[in-house]
Length: 431
Image 1 (cartoon, rainbow, N blue to C red):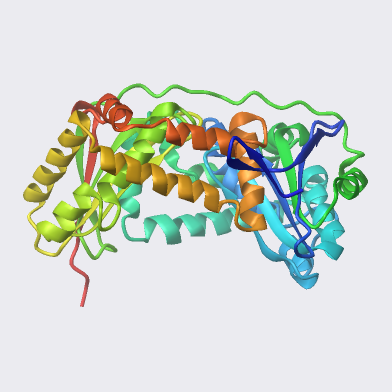
Image 2: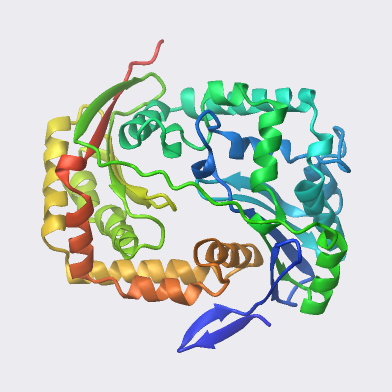
């Protein structure tokens, strides 16, 4: 059971069931190597954090390194996994989900399931004030290192503050604010855990050298005793339209000046999101992007040109970023960016649209290469579509884009009157 074919397109073969606790289980069998990927996604991210709770979802990445049955400096989850041959053991937090995953020797699958069961069902009894204090300090240090004391970190905060209102969870980035992280108490962390980390709010994917019958026995062994739970309702705060704004930030860590433009964008899986994703490639792909060619190759005023769409369930953002060559005329660069964006709002070249579709289609199909990426693809489909077979649906949405639809979406979303621009001034470095 590896791939199925539907109208000429590949789709991952799978079995799916729901445990009495509400936990969703998806199994993708591939017996080509004696490995199994264990991948658990919880439907909670920074978009689910209420006022005063920014950074809580990411904080759990750190707190979940221990549980009631896995404690102590030499008994943390990652250390136990490493000793039995796991690879790729890690976790990540986004706006929309928190993911925990590891690739196991098939013979050691029970170890990973034990650990994931310990996270899901036996976390709070092991949480102490000392552990919470330690991990709060670690997260705050991560914020300083990766955001506050990093090149263009100030720009990221400025963009988020300009795009999203004070009570919107996207305003404070996934890392969270110092004051919210520091104010996390055992009681508040416990309430967050009991709300969001219940079995019904999670999907477990097993991909690799395991049969469906074997998976059912193993999952029942480690998760079968969990009581029934209910999936919580996710908040959906609105974001009002923004007016055009220009912001200047000074950055002592940046080597080059930067012009960063951003707009509100559609939510994940909206048809316009696929148009804007392709537009980002049409504008900024190295060598072929229209904006890249004009700024990097012709005008030679830019070191790098980037464009990307950041879609989330609450609505996303579209970004165009230009890193300026030393001594470049920022006003001239702006004029070129203005011109190319105006061209995109007016018309899109058919050949460029076709090239973007081929690139994105190839990227989707590349997810079939490797157990880890297959497991993530199944999880992505479950998160956005509530079913594992989302690859064909995604291909169909990409193929439905056209030069006309990309132009229409560009005109709809990239309104100059709704544009946020942050200019980063690179400060001279001390001798």
